[in-house]
Image (cartoon, rainbow, N blue to C red; front, side, top):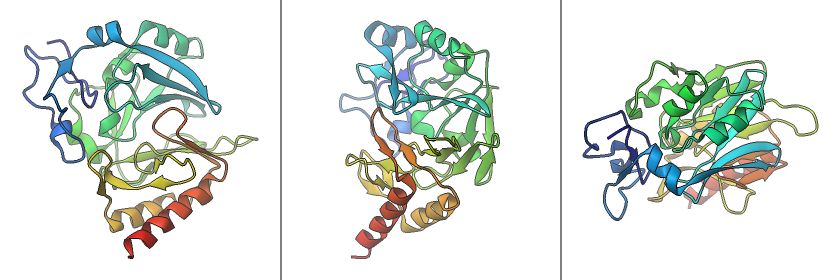
Length: 268
């Protein structure tokens, strides 16, 4: 089967003669195996049933799958001092989407928050000439399709340029990462936290979960460590994992209030 894709989490696996017997990402307690059992698809099959939509979401170009597929995250195109970054990836890659991004100058590198959003990261890298994919080394074991394009980084911070820093938040996964972009100007700085700090439905707070679909809360020590790691960064906006799930304005205060709300809740 050419590079099978798990239908529940959207992760693309290495090429194999037959579909894998298991998806380790879905069998982990943070995720789940689909209610109809383990099922697989391919890029070609996805392209027959889905398309990629491109939206301007509060000043950030977002790519998402329509209709929704798997976890239904979005990818975001960030024109930064480190080059044009694709933050997160999707299971589907289309020629139309690649050409649209090429018209904006192409993509220079990919950075991903955590294993649930690895998706078809190698296909996205290849589409732009085998560009580097930045992943935290703490999550190396979850990579299902290895590639020379993957660059594992270590520690709690990786500065990609004067205006872009990757921050290891931990908690959800050991290497869960947020991207801080010092945009400046009227728009102000922004935080892109993936699922480490998930923007909730009221779009005024974030939450901190070890498993979102299975409702397992994050350990207090992990939340405290995350709070310390993001404490030195200011930001106006927080762009969540899916289209429209953003905190626009007052993001730094909203995140700090969310940390305190979490600790007040667990204190009983």
